Image (cartoon, protein in one colour):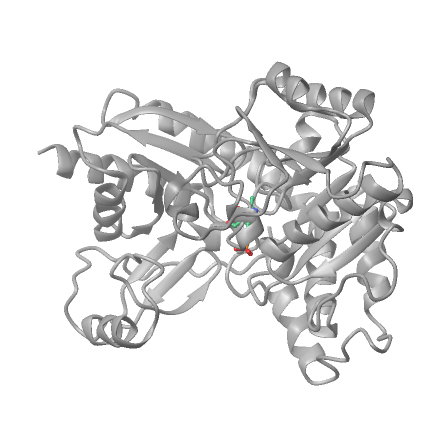
Length: 420
Ligand SMILES: Cc1ncc(COP(=O)(O)O)c(C=O)c1O
């Protein structure tokens, strides 16, 4: 591993809210919309898997920007690509060609075994794009009656924050009071292939799932589920749309989480790590018989596929093409999983781990997920809770074996402190 991982002189130790931290937080609170509930840490700089706050405390980043930082903070190859592109050309719009779009599209399509790529920016835009693509394909290729297309989705999903996407969210916080909602979605339990098959009818154009549900708490479906989804979709003439925005690009120990069951979706959505932790880059991939239903003027984005995004995305694909990061996630993920077993019954009730991605259910008697994350922060590790009592560990794939030990030791200490 060549990534230049910054080593801590001292870790956070007794993180406090003293020093410069409170003033920065107060300014945020005063002027920035209150759509998040961040941990009370103000990060100033970062390298590899480690971040430093405005008061000089260092923390191991075990969230990695919700997997947008799979290659760590400031990976030299990604930064070099961004820097040289910044000086050359950053934006043309798609009204003109530029010299990097084709190369990025080719490299990404080859990496995941698809014909073509459609570039967007945020993950939610990628999901919206896939929904439009599936509906258009349904009307024009499958001959679904006008306005009747439906898409089957999984309960517990998280695909982003737009109105159409929250319309099929099962999370009341994400959905409440944002109606009227976009129709045309049907929910089935995640991991239940029989329910999925039962929800499909002649107007179904797609099944849209995350191969592993990240925000739900790293929920891994039963073995064989993805293969069953593939078979059901093929038999019913329905597109299998895989949202690998969080699960993809090395996180699970393979390039895609779908690779674990050797299935190829019809439409693949990527985001987060595709932007190398530098800027938002998302992409929808499909083979030409599907992709070609979108014609000029029917979909687009001013910034989608801009030269800077393509330079960074191409560097990311170059890193993944070596296989080094996938291998690293698989090996270090094994270490993480082995170490977490030791915490079962000691404040941890259950955990799920695939590659360097763990969802850990903490004993509610010890504290909430938020309590654990605050305590972890005081022990020098940044992580994020989800759904009450689950915390996620998803460090950048450049972490070292001793970083993994440090994270699990910190979790053990945090749980002990809370239990006292
Ligand atoms: C699986 C999945 N899809 C879509 C999104 C939305 O991505 P973005 O926040 O870039 O819009 C996320 C973000 O967490 C995600 O995890």
